[in-house]
Image (cartoon, rainbow, N blue to C red; front, side, top):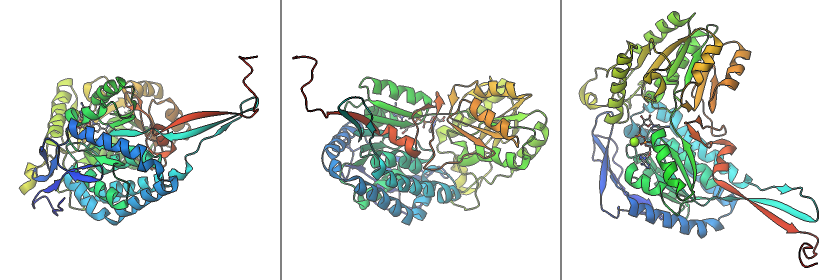
Length: 501
Ligand code: NAI
Ligand code: MG
């Protein structure tokens, strides 16, 4: 591994991390990944494929059956805690790397991503010693108890929108519960996961407990999802690929958890604090360039305040500082890739074709120098949207919000739930009964009342409907990474009377 300091210098180089070793891909192939702010090559990375995934799964199996099974819960906790501290100590450098890899502003990687990565490893370090079975009061001279055991070898496929944080959400609970892992980072953002692998090695995890194999989805990802010797597959990404991996896992009956797309309703009632709601709508859709599965991408406005709200929202959106993500004053950096940028541009045309209005933005900003080659897009508001339009039903995954007007609460809840997804929802109102009524009625795994995009390692996150299944974070995450064994013990000491008498 090398450690070049910035995108303008020699590209960083990374190998695969398998069985505690840094190795080239069996094929010898590599791929490059750009800094999305400039298009310059950030890193050259070994390109894992089926052969490498096979090797990594074998290593993870050996570690699971061997050394890792002998590590006590306390020592697993200590290793996770040590890892959290190593990340914390290096967080400034890692934040800069994450910004170069993904394009998200340095303010976000420094104050959101890295602190939450540390928090997740810290939180699950504490859980390692608290994963317990139970005793069941069964009748007769019998003793029945349960053991909560790790699932085994876990394949984990993660996306590019929060590269390090998605790795943390997946690795931390799996390791706390005693599993071993093959992690496949997204091809757009492999760098953070490789840096994390180096810290996992430094923390002292036994070889093979965590293996990191970067590569493309159709090759490395598909090989992992269809592998016969993984016990569990955890996937975060598009609903389209979620369905594919669930199907290939089904052939081996591999346990699957999915965290997929969203099209969240973010709802503003006339009685809301409008200033708070405007800022909340912005947080809902412009945070991380809108590349957030729980983004508030359908903004429902109460007809009584629509005009006033939109005036303020447009004015503030046009003032968002889009540009150099390494500048600490930047609020929005580039989209992650040219492909994502083109996808967003495509949706602007779709919106116009459907009769929606572009109220602000709708195109890339004018930037200077190297940033002209970056994948930037302006904060964009579509007005006059109907909930049935494609821009209200499909995940765009950019800083693009569709504004829908509503007249009354019943109509609103119906529209809010008329969508294939069910990941998250937001509501802005001072009426607490209405807020809780909505929280109960909306089909979503996470609801925010007078706030948006709040996360904590202790609080579960995951989707209803086509947003997936399983919950990450909190104690619920441990359910995905453990299985229950029921053990029966005869206390009578007598032969079973059923046969033989
Ligand atoms: P994607 O679902 O293709 O990629 C996510 C991960 O899955 C990556 O690691 C990728 O390499 C892997 N992958 C891709 N095809 C695979 C396959 N056939 N088998 C196994 N693994 C595979 O997402 P993509 O193409 O990067 O983005 C497309 C759209 O997906 C976005 O515009 C957005 O709407 C959605 N998305 C949602 C995310 C979320 O957080 N829920 C994250 C990323 C994308
Ligand atoms: Mg894809």
